[in-house]
Length: 154
Ligand code: ADP
Ligand code: MG
Image (cartoon, rainbow, N blue to C red; front, top):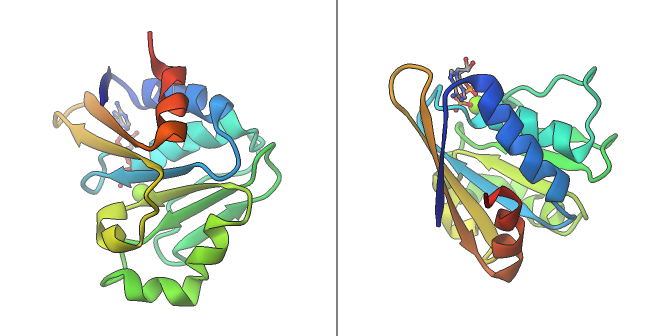
């Protein structure tokens, strides 16, 4: 487990970009945190690190549940499952296929689909201090997630 503190949205993006540069096909990142915590902001930085071009906006797919960014070095599959009741809604989204598609999978509101998350994944919990401060706690599950997290080690 590792905790990092950031003091602005750009600092959160920069941290995520560092992780994105080290990410590999098949990596799964599960984001938890209240509305406005910074899950989408994190994903924006991650996208840059994966090589998604600056010109391509990265927004919360709250209504579509999934945005695909295939122009990157590694494709980014960005899920936001806020509107799902539980993991049963994932069948319509071909969730299992995306896990095997050779991209990086990011899930906002991952706690909603806890029983469908793979054993090997990096959990990221974001807590706001009410201002611009955020505490990001990273919990790796599996050897690959531990290796990925080393990209953030000091
Ligand atoms: P979520 O996807 O978790 O609902 P967003 O990323 O959409 O949250 O929104 C986070 C908001 O908080 C943005 O308006 C962002 O600019 C702001 N913000 C302020 N400080 C930070 C920080 N340190 N890290 C991330 N976002 C921050
Ligand atoms: Mg969001």
